[in-house]
Amino acid sequence: MSLRDNPLGELKVPLTWAAAIALIVAVVAATAILLSDRRETFKAEAYGATRRASDTVLTPVGDVLAAPGRWIGGGFDVVRDYFGAASENHELKAELKEMRQWRDVAIALKDENARYRTLLGLKTDPPIPMVAARIVTDSRGPFADTRLANAGSERGVKPGNPVMSENGLVGRVIGVTEGASRVLLLTDIASRTPVMIERTNARAILTGDGGPNPRLDYLRGRDPIREGDRLLTSGDGGVVPRGLPVGAAVKGLDGRWRVVLASDKAPIDFVRILLFQDFSQVVNQKELSQAPVPPPTGGMPVATVKPPAAEPKGASAEAKPAGSAKSASSPAADVSKPAAKAASADDSAAKSAPAKPKPSDGALSEAAKAKGAAKPKGAPAADGAKPASAKGVTAKSTTTTTTTTTGAAKPAAGKAPAAKAPGDRTAAAKPPAAKSDPAAKPKPKPKPPADGTQP
Amino acid sequence: MSGARPLEPWRWLGVPMLQVVAATILFGIPLHAFGLQLPEPVFPMTLAFAWAVIRPSILAPFGILLLGLFLDLFWGGPLGLWALCLLIAYGGALTGRSMMAGQARVILWAWYSLATATAMVAGYLFVMLDSRSTPGLLPMAWQFLATIVLYPYAQRLIDLFEDADVRFR
Image 1 (tube, chains in turn yellow, brown):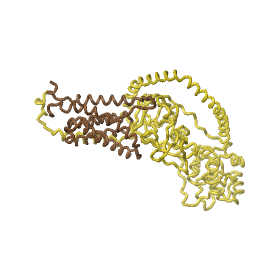
Image 2 (cartoon, rainbow over the protein chains, first blue to last red):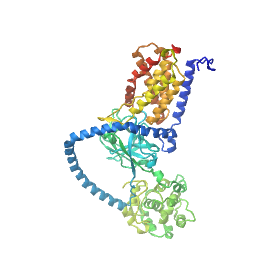
Image 3 (cartoon, rainbow over the protein chains, first blue to last red):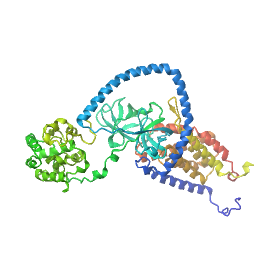
Image 4 (cartoon, rainbow over the protein chains, first blue to last red):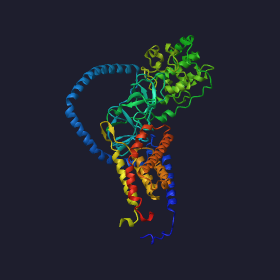
């Protein structure tokens, strides 16, 4: 049909104006799409059906296109291996000699570590299952650094899972579909990873900026870092497991501390996706949220250091059964006990509500009686932790609850460690404190606080 | 006589779109040689400039929108980022079209560089607002250089299609 025959042929619209309107419509559409984008969240649904569909299509395409590159690379490797076998053999022998020494050290340290863990009753991290995948596409721009791996939801991969190469941490999964995962690299502008400096244990946030060397933000402490310091994941926040190698610290040209990534030592073609579950997914949030909020302290100062005079009383009160605990008249002693027990007790969240015990719960009601009796006048601030002080039954409480409500996280059961500062939560895990008073020991193995504090 | 018939949209919009999509996918292969990687130029930038110079069009902005969305999906960036950046470059080139008419190749290359810089500065600002962090300038500079060397392709499209339709002569 020619233009002359077209019924709309007489409709004349200035082309420039029409093009301008089309441009404005397209800009509005692009802006709306950009504003609604949420690619870096942990929610699987935020990734969107469009992204999932495109990843599903692009993964086999990228896999096929990358195959010649892999074959050529494999051919180069064969030639290099053939000509460099002798020198490589020499290097490997030297390395093996050094590694044998390290193996002996590692065995000794492993044994020592196991003993310490047994002694302290540490709850060690369970082994993390992992999935191997191949990288099929790669983007390296200043605004996006992601890769597409050919393992997806069919193999249990979830958004948030950390991704490692054989050398170190690469990034984390931000989107999953059938047969494909989108990996957000540490260098991406949206990437934030909690790390620690191995030498000083100082914490920082590894922030990507699109370049090859992400920077370290929020470095804390005095002189926390030096050139060449090794960086590991800190595990803070529960997103990434603790101790994964990240890289080495360098001073950037802009004067900021940056990281030479360990994963950049070799091309990232094969990766391991750690099926690590975030702490918030593991714990029973419903059970935890059942604990009522403790009453406000009302601005009353909370006794944090036990006066020496109260020490014998506190000790005797602790040694006595629940009924005898009424004689404990020292507020300081009362305040000091529950925290110690809370810290050393099991982490059962169901019994983590000492502030308002339920009448139906026998153990808690006993504790409530003791609380009413042992509660010293003028010390309402310690209410949240008192029941445990009267009887060891309600000592099953999370450390976080106790320390945040009363601020009296003193681990002592009326003994010497009671004089420790409130913030010293690790003191609760000391075996001598628990052994000194068998009656005060609710469990044979006192456990450290659940916040992962290392001794 | 090819010069006498009108220029079909698929010839000057469709085919170049497929070409830049193919080039983008090819350059997205994880290929490493001697510790170096392939550069990552913004191939659709050539179309955003060339289409604006060739003629005003109703279809071209939507073509650029699609190409930008493809870039965002393929590279895994914020969806809509490159679409908006490319449209800004296209709008700028369209506005300055009358000034570019009849200019020498080098001058047009400078205009193309300016359009590319505008798009990347816009991207820098959008990403800064979105992630509350400043992208590195060095990787931006590398991508800018890798993109402006693609100008010969844009020039070829201009030479091919600027006078291809008798209705726009």
